[in-house]
Length: 495
Image (cartoon, rainbow, N blue to C red):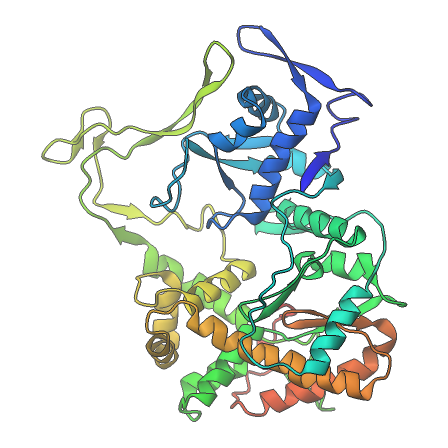
């Protein structure tokens, strides 16, 4: 989306079109607020859609900015000075094989801007996803369900209220606004308001504008005749992994598999219902247990990492920003020494280098691995190379060696294999089991899907939950169990 941000009232006056930027030599340059928004819009779109590992940054080549305005560096410098963006001048692309035209840097939004920055208007551009002609299904889905789901998506109503920003926990003492989630919600909500929707089956999952909005936006800004309620599968991929393992012949009597299966299942109360958290969501143990396993073992497993003997000094020190005559930054951030070491591994300025480097993920900087990180690491293990010497591979090798070996054997180097297997099980459950029953047994129900979650009108909540829990129970009953007891009970409301 080409976006306009709320600079009026913060940086500029109402209806202001131009502003003056002064470089280091106090030379004045007249800049356009419209161009400023286009520069920031490019950063926002790349930021939302970035695929790089450290997703708070967007990788952008200088050539992309120069297409907007040859004087783009004045705008970038103004955005930096006014605490709107952060630029890593010494950024090295994660994928060094990528052919990027022009020098590439990474751009992020400043925390100050995340607190007050809002999108006030948008229009469509080349970044925006359209409905594909070819739809990628992994399994056969009931035709009546497919027809009804698409109809219900088109019947969804909009509640035009401001998109709420949500916070995410960065560590035990700091929480920050999840600006990426906010921007994605703004982009897709605006398109829904303007009937500019997409409806794509990709890699076996249904993707729509609704899916791309945050959970709080889906619940607050959309409705049918009544407010939306929802049901989701707790610890969805770990659950379907357990089912897949059963289907592929794992020894269900092994303690290893019984423990794994027990962690993906909720506690059952005396009345036969499932234990729920304060928000009424079914609780399981898996991700909290994995988080604890990762947290307890990471310092032991990764306290030191052996590296090749270095050729150049790796000492780093922070250099304050310096500017050229036009006020453009030429140096900033962490700078490596790079002096060539002598035959004994000694730097003429900084002394000897250690052959071991302490793992940067230490407890003084990050008190614990978060639940979100545990979920990300599980996904990395599931879809990545299990032969690599990583923390999550080590944890599965220690606690679940048979499961790790079985998954690695079936993947056979195909990183998409397990994802497609588990998505197929999840999709079959949602569409061919749950939706088939709901449409057949609840007249007038309308359903919106979001991967392992469904949304429906609040008035049908009791009926839907009854069917939902009945079908989930059938899945759980196929898996073995170990009783952990109440003292181990830990909230796990999300996937």
